[in-house]
Image 1 (cartoon, rainbow, N blue to C red):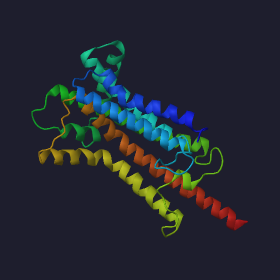
Image 2 (cartoon, one colour):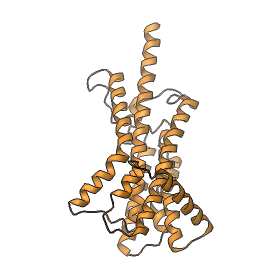
Image 3 (cartoon, rainbow, N blue to C red):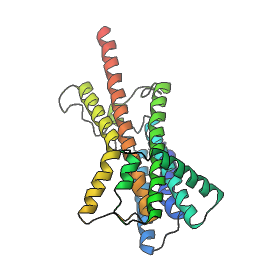
Image 4 (cartoon, rainbow, N blue to C red):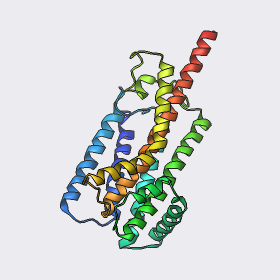
Amino acid sequence: MLSRLPAALVRAILVVILVVMPYALVPSSGSDNTQIIVLVAIFGALFTIVEYSSSSPSLVEFRDAPPFNRVRFSALFATVFCLAMIFKGVESPSAISTYFQNSGSVIGATIDFPYSPVRLMVVMMPDGTDPAVIQHLRDAAGLSYLISVFSVIWFIVLLRLYRWPRRTGAFNVWINLPTFDPTAGGDVVKRLQRDGRINIILGFLLPFLVPAVLKLIAAMGTAINLDNPQTLIWTVSAWAFLPASILMRGVALSRVAQMIEVQRRKSYGD
């Protein structure tokens, strides 16, 4: 545990920076928001320390099989940072914020074509929404969706380059898949392949399904207030990150199934 603690502390600090970053870069009013941010940051830091300092299985999948979690965290961090810089330029423009705003506008306009995830995010907004909010949403959705696509592509490239998941030695299924029970019944390889396919399909469809769900929730009278930059940042970040994360999990599970199948063939061949 002591040998793992320094790395766990570094990860906890990064989690705190991620949680606090939008509220540090984008002006926000209200002491209640500050208290919630502090509580979430403390909880995230404690959870990270406990998960990564323990040598036994935890809730975090692929904990000892980098770069799975590193790519996911980097994608989320980059998304939140880029969106925070876009909205920072609204209140206090600078050369950096202007660059992110222009990039978001170009990417958002390019990806905003009929039936695209970005178009669905824009269409879900109710009639009469401020055009500025629509523009910010389009810019944020386009940039965040592009980051999520690049993160998935980069993860697949790393899998090929490092022959993941056995880059540094034996792959411990018990540690890296704590929620997967190999004794639950059925062939392990088939179950992993099935779960991998389900995750890949779900990750692909979620960017299209989430706007429809949000539109349905708004029709029921509980619309999400995207006029608040903080809410918009985290909503769009989650909309782009979760599908990419699920898709990467599906690819990872498929790779683990392939690894187990290869090992079986070698054992039977011997």
